[in-house]
Length: 286
Ligand SMILES: CC(=O)SCCNC(=O)CCNC(=O)[C@H](O)C(C)(C)COP(=O)(O)OP(=O)(O)OC[C@H]1O[C@@H](n2cnc3c(N)ncnc32)[C@H](O)[C@@H]1OP(=O)(O)O
Ligand SMILES: O=C([O-])CC(=O)C(=O)O
Ligand SMILES: [Mg+2]
Image 1 (cartoon, protein in one colour):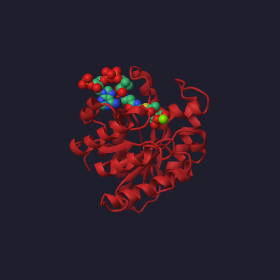
Image 2: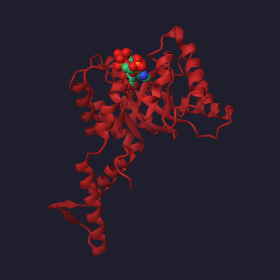
Image 3: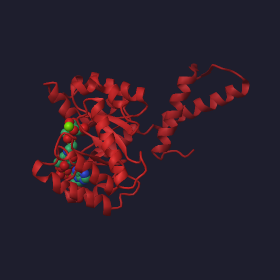
Image 4: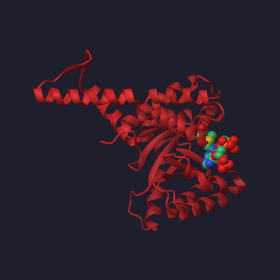
């Protein structure tokens, strides 16, 4: 999911050529106060006129407790956004308030209720502690995300290369998302020239269980796609697990072994997920 500053016509016009799964047009922190209205108008016009194909169109709006939040949401729904991303979510009530305003805007726009999805970004200690109630606050929520720049500021620390200050928060978010049955996305990595550090971070968050990552630059898309795409070895193993399961079923066996290792339901579920991810990445057809 690539952030695109909502006040930059050049970036907005070409953002879809780089292969991101989703574009996140930003009306919040990359837009200064004097440009809030013009950025909203610019993103509105872009969503109305540019064909972004099947790339998901997400808009990060300003919070409802600012003078811009309500107008942002209404304009983006009329413009055809797929998902509204609420920044700095701290309580379930923050999500419920936005959900209610989206419902009102859907009515005004003549859309069926529930058409517009929602994401909640969590960017403070309080938000992390409320992660489960935030993640389950609305049926519109398709995912939650961590916003690490604001989060470390709230914690009165900084971001380190190894990310120790984010470890607990990231894990709690993954737990909350899994409990709620929705997606979980990791935060941005600010140094677009540190390819090695970026790759290390993507490996780490994949291992923690995240479904993907927000990026700020087209150069960061390739490494995320590469690291999240199952390798040929992983795909081969997953296919053999599924084969072994079929054989066992045919023979009426419960637990079976493959290469000396036990194959049971969790192993089969993980193999299924590998194949789904490979299919979604376009490296296999099923
Ligand atoms: C804490 C937070 O809230 S983070 C979220 C808010 N921040 C953002 O949205 C920042 C978005 N990113 C950017 O503005 C830029 O990528 C920067 C400032 C980080 C780096 O800028 P640059 O060094 O100029 O980037 P770079 O030289 O790699 O750009 C290469 C090409 O990609 C384009 N590009 C760069 N970033 C983006 C982007 N986010 N979206 C779309 N296109 C982009 C550039 O326009 C350039 O196009 P060109 O080759 O046609 O001229
Ligand atoms: O949500 C993000 O990844 C970017 C952001 O606002 C933050 O880090 O504070
Ligand atoms: Mg932030």
